[in-house]
Length: 243
Ligand SMILES: [Fe+2]
Image (cartoon, rainbow, N blue to C red; front, side, top):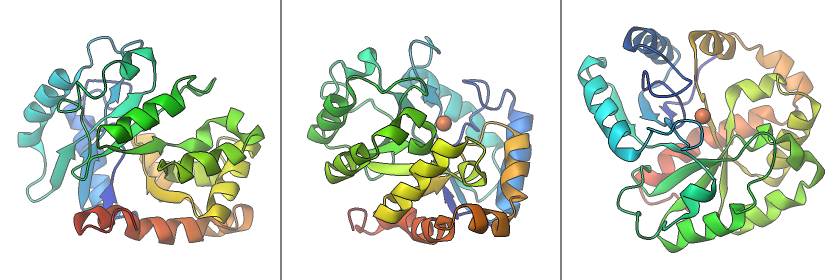
């Protein structure tokens, strides 16, 4: 399976979260991604003070600076982050705007717990936008509690929140409710990005070996999502990011 040229969500920055532990393992995965068609990576380590107390923007910038010299020649990379929407993140977003790790067009990746909806989700999304950011909610298909309130996605999308789905989710690995969410998002045209969210070589092997025929049979809208998403990540390069 060929992947989108730009991967906007992964945990390839080594030794900082639950992703790749060593530079060697990460570089092996990066070689696999290049072979699968990836041309550019945006590293998105977890920033979640409740799980990774030392992971602040300064540490991530330092880790990226140390990893960069090891990367393959010619590979374009940059650093953003995957921010957990928790109480800490809500504090003083406007005051910290210059520090936050985001994509080059000021899109910013956020996530919620898999167990419950962040009570301050709407407030955070609003404040991010007031501070000039364009929020992207990571893997909405993994928040299974949303399967019972799918209309929430309409409101979020209408309010400027875009969605990034994981390739592996299209295999149905997260169950019936996840598939229900993917189908809903696809029907509504809300599958804005698809990315690897890569944590391990095992995941990469599973993504690359995915049987497209199986996905088509079980997730009839998956190709629509993938084709649409394939063009979107590049849009922010030429001012079409809001198209
Ligand atoms: Fe992630």
